[in-house]
Length: 192
Image 1 (cartoon, rainbow, N blue to C red):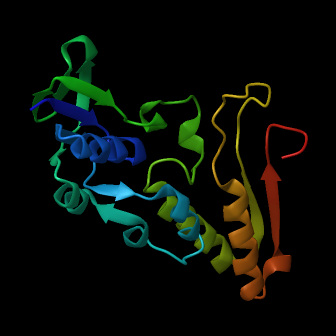
Image 2: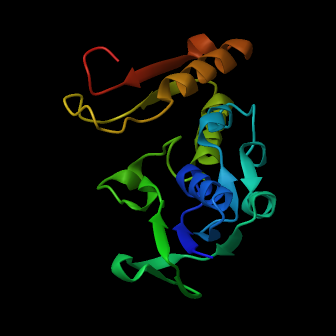
């Protein structure tokens, strides 16, 4: 039986593993975390309407349901021509190599100065903590938005920033303190 090594436990990696198993290929999926994070539903974390547990599924459950092997390990080096990955706790290789590690491995200058709903999963609760601190204070200024080059049609945008700020607006209204907060939305184009 042919085998495949899938690097990454997000949408692309899990979907690849499921697809390959349906085609009778033996699959090993390597992820640096033990859960599948459902980014689209994370917009409810900053306002306290969902928790990390609510928007995560154990990868072990998905592996069992779909018949792929799961390895929790940190990829350190990829040797694509050899179909091999060197990880913190071992080496893995296969007939086929699928790299689906997402953009989170890319480090951008200045990213230590902001939090993103589309960033690392642990950033969503950090956003909630900062919002809660401002609510506790009773007033403040909150800016949300996304970056990108509006002239590049292939550029990935900042995700559901609109939804998060709308959710925050509604939370502040429910608390009766919306008028105590200045909400600012920013985007790299004239009309978002």
